[in-house]
Length: 587
Image (spheres, rainbow, N blue to C red):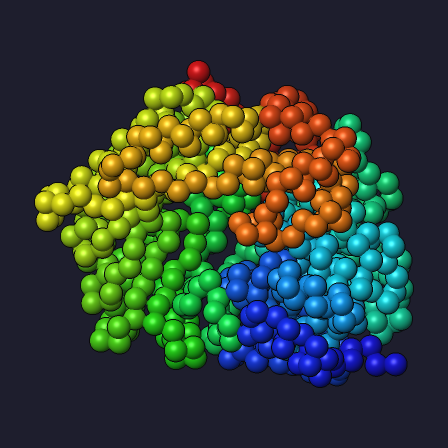
């Protein structure tokens, strides 16, 4: 029997006519690789556990997709989570989840690799496994099932999803995935069963964590089998030249969240803001050359027809050759009406160069990650932004022709007071007033407020998360302050942030909550129209999990945390020192 049967006829006849957005499921994207899964020695499906419109734009998945397809013995396809209307049709017709390019059922692939980019995607993982006909629990899978691999942010604190994954790869996935597919190639030639293959993965694939060989105890997660590592070092790609930038990025057939050429210019961040998980775990800082970036931008524009280039990193301001890079891009695209965006700029002296940097290229909106309104709290979280630089940078943005500014804030930080909340509005108002120096008008400023979630592997990992009542009071206060002003506030959904706290800080006991919520209908939890907090509350009651202890209680500094076996670049002694310094500042 053919292991990877093509079910394109069924997809065309049973699915596409019955869903609201069939373009998401058609495939046929420009620049898709479309390698032959029938003849490949190893087949991989990269799975993004959210809708196509989001997953098709995910930069990390795109890099891995091109890297794997560049290996001659690998065919790498893509798959996404069907929206609820498509899930309903697939269940009614018993249509299995498939690869977007091959139209082959996922269960026949050798590897199904999930990019676990954010906490609220966890129930989508279960939806995709179930639609593919793959047992949810790793312990119930057989040789007929793919190896289920998880990477990206949630692999840094993997225990809540440990029951559902065969392998986690925390850190940069390029080298471990290459080693994994090479091992699978050899194992398939030897007809090696799953039970013999998984120990080899745990022992030989760099940074591979195989949860079944470990037990969660009061003293932490420890091995229950010899010859597997007691701690898992987070994978780190030493030189980005080992992963070339895609020259022909995917262009979605159905609209994606980003309609632009996105180029990773730098990996890691030198600022080490004390709340930021990505900034701490993605060290050391590694940069791409100006020449590589400009060449990729030209190739990407020519291959896609996009009219915008986004220069991506955790802090684009800290790219050391930013001015030279923008000048080179100006020269390359002058007269072509190509815009350049610089997401999450730090508003310091470099931002004042905005008019010069944009030059002949059409400028777009400006986004600043201020994080806190008061200098005291910015010092406490190690956010090195001076207010005078922020004001001067925004003034330069108005002069450059921008008409709106977005500023990111975090509320609920340890040591935060009512004065710190008022300072959020006051800062936004002062930023708005800088436009008076340009055209005697107030500028439109939007404050985007998220709720502090203490993330693993950061100096604030021990902190407690504030209660929902506190967050509601902050929201009401900022709304009242901004009434009849040029400042607008947008807020993350409080209950979703509370759930994030559970999903990133919990241990294996949280897996039962996830499974219960999914069985009760939790789907697409990051989408407002599908989010149902009541479903998660019912799951918490069913599993008797102490939510307050998991989320709203400070962890002792000498506690072994559910993620302590995953080891990033900085050790916990450094994090503890920084946490103590933060508490000294906030009192």
